[in-house]
Each structure stands twice: as C-alpha cells, then as structure tokens.
Length: 120
Image 1: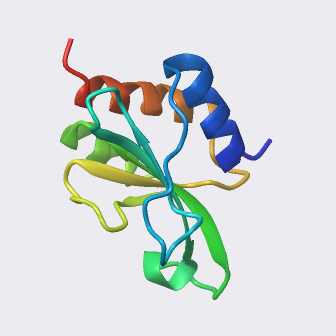
Image 2 (image 1 turned 90 degrees about the vertical axis):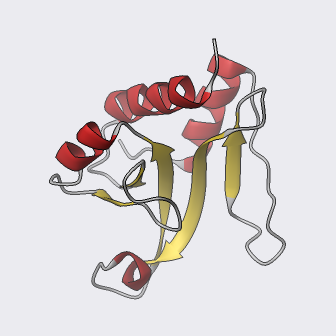
C-alpha cells in the first residue's frame, strides 16, 4: 500500500492534534507540519523527479523529516531515502512517497522527527 500525503496528515492529526499548514503561495501543495512550539517536523511536497536526482520528469510526493545524522546516513543507502530536498542534508531526510515506502517505518520516523524538535 502506498503512503499518501493524506495518510500522513491523518496520522499527524490523530497522533499530535496537528493539521498541515500551507505557507507558500507559489507552491500551494507544499504542506508543513509544525509542533506546538512552531518547529517544523515534517514537510510534504510534490517535486519534479529531476530535482531529486531521479530519472523522469513526473512530479512525485515526498516527505521531509528531521533525523539523527547517523540514522539519516544509514537510511540514505536504501532506495526511496534521499538527501533532504531544500533542507539541511545532515539533519533532514527526504522519503519518496511511493509503493516502496513502508507505512509503519515512515510513521516511526515521523514520530522521531516530532520528538527531535519538541522540547519536553
């Protein structure tokens, strides 16, 4: 089953009570997930494959999340995990939302991203 942007938004709302914010007039489909302190823990965007270094010209949905640098380094060796698009490439990771994306793993990474930016 493919992880969709709507599945991510539903998870964020059910888990954290957070709804996506659309901050960019030039990119109306770019959605940001922020914690209660206003810190970003996720961004869902639709970008051309070529901008990600992937073959093809189609736009694809991606999720950017904050990660521990060591974990990010490990994940970037797997298909579907890329250096972050438009974010710090050491501390952020891009996940391609396609049939290869593992929903359970993706939501665990989203939880981890939320924890990394949320002060207890």
